[in-house]
Image 1 (spheres, rainbow, N blue to C red):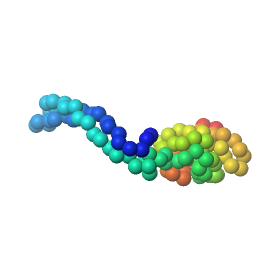
Image 2: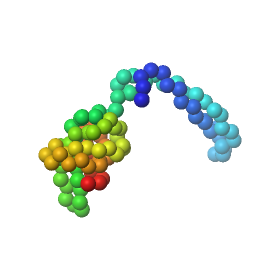
Image 3: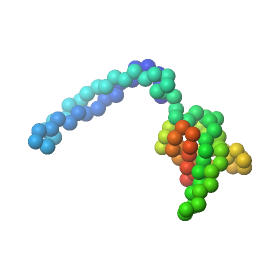
Length: 100
C-alpha cells in the first residue's frame, strides 16, 4: 500500500453478439489517498473476536498483531487469556476465529 498515484494494467474484452472478439490492453491510474491506503485494521487495534461451534457463539476482545484488511487471516491476542489465535477479519472491529 502506498499513497499517491498507482497505475494498474488490465485487459478489456470487446464483444459482439455475446462473443469476445478482441482483448485490448488498458491502463488505469488511481490516486490513492492516505485514508485509502490505510488498513481496515491496524496493528494493535482492539477487535471483538467470535468463536462459533454449532449454534453456540462466544466473543471476547482481542488485539490485532499485524495490519490487515477485511478477509485477511491474522494472529490476534485474546485480552483476557493472552492466548494467540488465528482469525479472519470480518470488519474494522470484528474477526472470526479460525484456528485455536
